[in-house]
Image 1 (cartoon, rainbow, N blue to C red):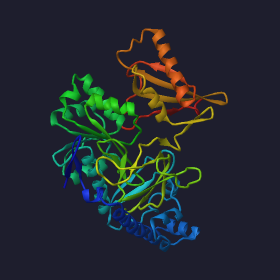
Image 2: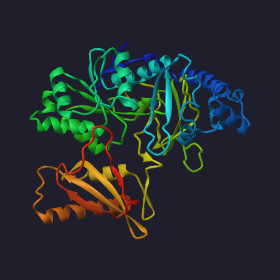
Image 3: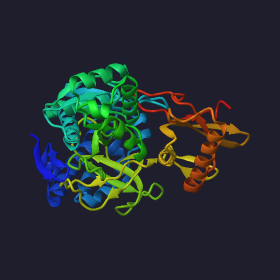
Image 4: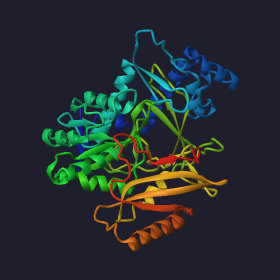
Length: 448
């Protein structure tokens, strides 16, 4: 099922070349056909959408072209929470066709629940299988899935991709990192799937165990998602593990990992446009921004049977990258996520994202990719402390070196982000390691 074609970096792999290299006119015709069917199904089978369309004075017949999507109402995370558990399903959960349920943690309200028919699961598997091919894998690959299995979509999404690719799957889930390292080494794993922070922990653990993973291990690619990863962190993982880090994007509300994914050229994430329509909108006006400009990413599902979504506001900030990719895929590319509209920090009136701190720290060889932003209150003002961890070889006994490093990091933050924060340099392994998503921001303002 995997086709290859020559590139300067070796054979380019495709899982579904008939889709991945489809002509633009043919692809947009497929999108329009599926969009019309999705809108009709939402109107007929989901009261929420019927009411929203009626209030907007729009019926399914109003969609005659892809541009008509802009006339349709949005769906938000709060809408999904309000519909808990199954009111946004197009198929009753006891129908017999709903094969699986996933849900968010629901830590700030009701969980967002999504359902999958077998066709939904197959489509999900296809998109992740494309990611495996884009990472250089095929049916001969051994795929180590170190995302968590369960209600979180990461583990089972990657697993389904391995099934569709006919790869050999090592379903490790997260945790027991030393065993992860042992099996990666002993089994000859060549593709790792996990969060970026866990990939870094696996690499560091392997080195601590006496391995030289970049030289000894067969792993050649890591498919990483579910959290931001700066270019500095990417380079650190690539150097320590000897891999090409492929950024994958997804969210449980829309499907899970596989909505878009980089190829080995690392020049943007190819959107699975046969299954999703991407829009990038100004978060204030909700009007489209030109390709190349940042805005809020909005997705409409085209093939989901159980949990279709119309114009779902992800709150993620990205942009459409113009031009073609050297890999030969015609699917449009989105940039890596720059932040979220709801995790933006306002520091002395300046809007910044945690990922911007990560980019600044990448310029300092004395610190690692482990950091935390701690928010506290001092009187009426918010106070921000940035904890950064030094590399093992840094001489922590020299107070002047520590003070100098803190001063230089603070100056760089001030220069690049126009914010002043309290920088605290801490010893190696002082910051808690994560086997899933790293906890980058700790908000203690309510405790102060």
